[in-house]
Each structure stands twice: as structure tokens, then as C-alpha cells.
Length: 300
Image (tube, one colour):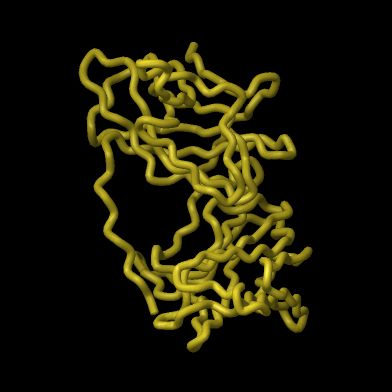
């Protein structure tokens, strides 16, 4: 029988059967939602993130978001020095405006504007058309994908994936597994994890390993030690957590077969949220470190 390490005790974590697809968006987008999605029918904090001003402008002064069908507004939060107005004309809009000169977002200073709501009960995709106002002009982030393969959007609308019950609203990306050599029975996996509403990683399964777990590498005295992480691995809301060499990482023990570079490893990640709801996400990680990504192109 395959052994699996669980770091959350006293609860059975159900196995997932679906793959949570990460929201696709261009790396150059300036107004976006955190990756990971939301569970159908759940309350969700849509946190619109602004990363830079419009084109050659110096700072951002406002953000207006059109509410799509399938999202019920429950409230909104304004950062310090900003005012928020909920306009319920037609589909409805929410507008944030800087009311204090020192509150504007200067240059690449990042801002976060939270819209609290409830998402539709049917899985699908929601697009929020956004208008970013700056000291010079504005940019409308409103493009949505069509049916063209490999299509790249210049000004994509912020996107929220609404997921079926049981599928973890957690984004898992940039993952890879260290290759093994003949006779090696352990290896490690690395990736980035982010959960828009926060979550806790409580277990990992893989058919290629008899046992798995989250470990931390730290210096104790004069030696480098690898210790298991007990009690689960927390994922704070709207923060990307990287599992990387020399720090937190996933260990795979009792390997059933060699893992040469170019092969792949299926894995299922199990999570529990603040309400005690269990979800899971299935991924397939490549064996071997991926090639570095090119620098993103800035859009105007």
C-alpha cells in the first residue's frame, strides 16, 4: 500500500479529480486579479491589483470596475486616502478615487482595491472591465480571449475563474521536479503557490512516490538540516509563496521508478480553508529545471 504523509491530523482530506486551471493573463497587464480563482457560490474578495500607471503617466489616480453578471457586490474597501463609490446603474460599477495627493500610486508603486462579493453558482469565467485613470490619460483593460490559438491580449480584462466545488482555488505554477540518477530513491519538487482567499496545504499525493511531505532546510549549529513541516503549510491570502531549493520544498520518498530529465510527475495537492472546507488540485510537473522566462513586454 502506498504511504502518504499528511501534515494535518484528525481530518480526512478527500482526493481531487479535477485540475484547477490557472487564470491566463498576459504578463504585461497592469490591472489584474490574483490567480487561483473562486469556488462557485462562495463569497470572494476580488482584489484588483494595479502595478504601474498608464503609458507615460507618472501616477494612477482612479480605478473604475464594471460588475459582470454572475458577481453580486456585497461591499468594497478603500485604501487610505481613497474614496470608494458603488454605482448600481445598469450592471453596476465600483469606482475608487484618490482624494489625498499623497495617496496616488506613483510610478511602479502597487495598489490593491478589494471588492467583496458572491460569485455565481455555475463554474465559468468572469471578466471585469476596468478603467485605470492617471494624471495623463487613462487605459481601459477590457480585452477578453477569443477562439484564436496563441492569442495574446494587449489590454486584458481582469479575470476570475469560478471553479467547481472540491477544486482548490489555489494557483500552482512554475513547478518542477529534480531529476534522479539510477539507484536514487528520493527527490524534491519546487513551485509557487498562491491562494486569493488564503488556504492551508495539508497533504500531497503522487503515484511515483511512497511518501511525500513539505520540508524546510535550515542551518542548525554548524550543519545543514532538513526538517518536516508539521501542522500544515499556510498560504496567506493574495501572497505568492515559493517552494525553492534551500528553503521550503516538497520531498518525494520511496520512488517507484527513476525520474530522468524530460519526464513528468503527476501530483495532487490537498488544502483546507479557514472554514474547514477540503479541496484539492491536480498538477503534472516536468522533471528538470525549466528554462528562464523572457522579460515581460510593457504595454502602453
